[in-house]
Image (cartoon, rainbow, N blue to C red; front, side, top):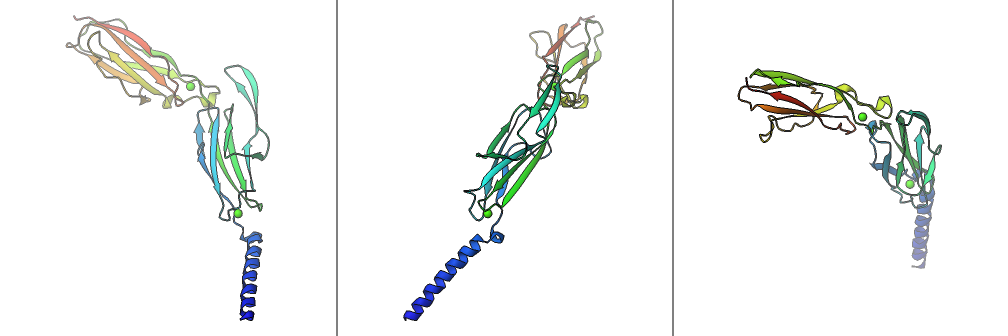
Length: 252
Ligand SMILES: [Ca+2]
Ligand SMILES: [Ca+2]
């Protein structure tokens, strides 16, 4: 009986020691898992000069406690020219892997460029995982400019008149490559009857590159002064002030 107890004890101690050996053997240690919860997606264009990342990590071996987390931004230095202030500016971020103590990171005052943000999470035995996202900054705080509106101004003596309104607009941004190309600008317009009658057309939804609008007035239309209202929006969401053009309709 005593021999059996000793055997069981030896077996238990052996199992324990083996378990510890297995636990300490680096080849059995699994890398942590890291994933982004928030922040620009890979390849995403960011119409902002700041980005905010949030991530999470886990480890099968439950040994993240004494580990460490690092972040890196590449490139960490960019010289650029600010059209608005007409000054050369240098963007700078600490070089290489930077130790962080939270699972969030915000980067401010980014210039228009391509960046890769990486997060490396290390467990307490030195195994690490790295995730990265590449994003494009196209900061644009400026509204487009309506260059011309080919609107009918003056008297309409003909009772059946159709007229095409053409809006010519272009976009401006902090750096030229941040500007929305003309084919991606969005237009909105209204054609409003004289008070108190309602608009001929209801307020339009934003339409993508629909800058030519044909409006017709016939003999049934009320005479008076009409208003053509329009505005233009860029991809960053900046909107021009509404521009208003008069056109007068007089019954023959
Ligand atoms: Ca691990
Ligand atoms: Ca713009």
